[in-house]
Length: 333
Image 1 (cartoon, rainbow, N blue to C red):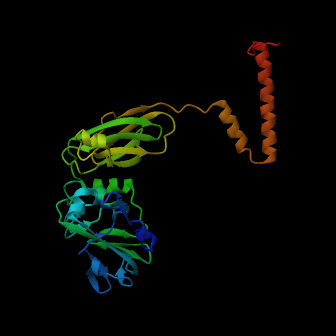
Image 2 (image 1 turned 90 degrees about the vertical axis):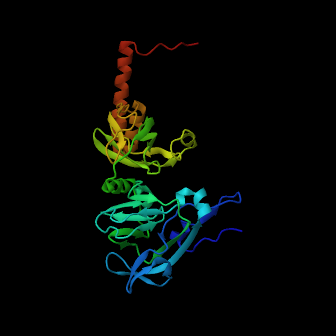
Image 3 (image 1 turned 45 degrees about the vertical axis):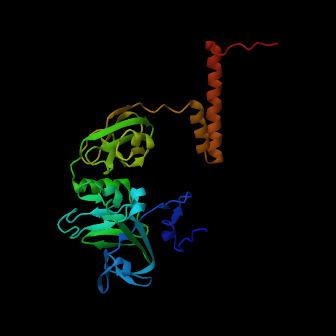
C-alpha cells in the first residue's frame, strides 16, 4: 500500500519511507521536539504534544502564530538501535550560558537551532560533552508542528525554527565554537584536493560520535566550512568510529594560487595533509577567450567592431607567418 503523505509541504518533507526489505521505516529528515518539551502559548507553557491544529503559540517576537499541522513520530528502542542517526540530541543545562537551557532539552537530530544569528541542526552541535546523543533511551516520540507564519519559538533563550529556517555548516561551526569543548586527539587525512573541492576524513579519537567541525582557509582567509559526518564503509572497516567521519566539501575555487589549509574549526588543529599549495589557474585557451569575447558582443555595432579587430589581427598574423616561415608549405597533388 502506498504511504499517504501529509497535505502540508513542510510535513511532506519529513515523510516516512519503507526500506523495501521488510525492515525498518526510514526517514529522510527527522525534526521536531521530544514529547514533554514545553512550548509558549497565551495561557503559559504547555507540552508540545498537547498542541492541536488551530491552537496558538507565542513566537520570539511576542506575536501569536497558529498551529496549522502537527506530526507525531514514535521510534522504539529496537529501531533506534538499527538507526542510531535517529537518536535524540540532549542539550545539557547551561550549555550556552547561565540557564540556557535551565533544564535538559531533547530535540530530534534535524531540528533547527537558532542562536546569536546562527542556525544549525541539533545533530551537528553534538560535542560528546555538553551536547550528546542519547543512544540508551528506551524510545522517543518527536512532535513537529507547522505554523501559519515563519517564526522562532524559544525555550530558555534557545531558539528553534519553525517553517523555512535553513541551517548552515557555517552556523553550526559558530555554535560549536561557542560551546568551547576542548578537542580530543585528532586522526585525519586529506585524500584529494581539486579546484573547489576537498575530500578526506577526520575523527576525534576521544569523542568518536562528535563530528569534527572543519574550516577551510585560502591564504589565511576562511572560505568554507563543513563537517566530517559522511558515512563510508571503508572507514568503518578500518575501525574509525562508526565510519561516519568522511567529508567532501565544495566551495568556490579561489582565484590564482596560494595556500589552502583545512583545520578543526574549534581549535585550529590542521588535518594531516594540510596545508596544500595550490597552483595558479591555467589561463583559458586563446580560442575560448575569442569565443567568450564574441558572446559578450551584445549589439550589432559591437559585433561589427569585434569582427574588424579580428580581421585585422588575422591579416597581421598571416603576414608575420609568411615572413618568418611559420606556415609550412602545402603539398599539392
